[in-house]
Image 1: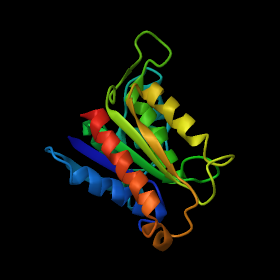
Image 2: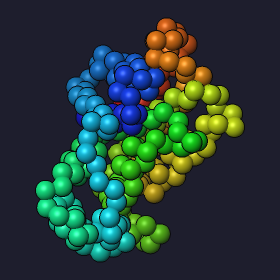
Image 3: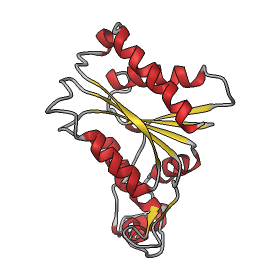
Image 4: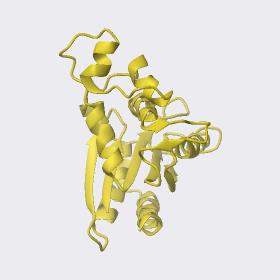
Amino acid sequence: MNILTLLGSPRINGNTATALTWIEERLTTSTGPHTLTRINLAEKRMAGILPAHYQAYAGGPALRGQEALTAAGIQPGVDDETDAILDAIVNADLCVLATPLFCWTFSALLMQLIERMTTLVTGYGTPSHDSQVKDKGFALLVTAAGPIENNAELLPVAFDRLCEFSLAKNAGHLVIPLCSNPEALADNADARGQAEHFAASLLDGCA
């Protein structure tokens, strides 16, 4: 199985990275020919969604890379690595989105990528609805400083709707609350057990 993890935290060694590492370790030590790649979005250059990107979602011609930037009037030479990330998502069998909770939703880094992921979908709301990630496994990991109740419970709902929109297979979600700092989280055996159990469920669900 080709597994891709996407770390959407601006801190590549923060709480979300700690919990994601637990999941990755469980995924890579399982039996089976699995390959795993992590992309730290904080280390990538990503342009926001442009009209030229959106027209593919709306049913028009798909423009990518410098072609889309030029159509938006952006000068050549702007380095945008988003298309390569989208290609990695399309080529993965399982994609784990990992984010800290920001303002009750995805981090800005991950939200920017999700906006570009809409270009992988065509014909939404019509009989010709299709997607380049159709039937691919998608999973969500969330770390939150506060509790789940009245704080993080809406993000899994948004993720469920993203999967429906993308025609992706919803492999599940895990929210780890009350994350104070990476050092304390690293010593939290209960949180680690939840992450490892979640990883095992991903393998069972996407096998």
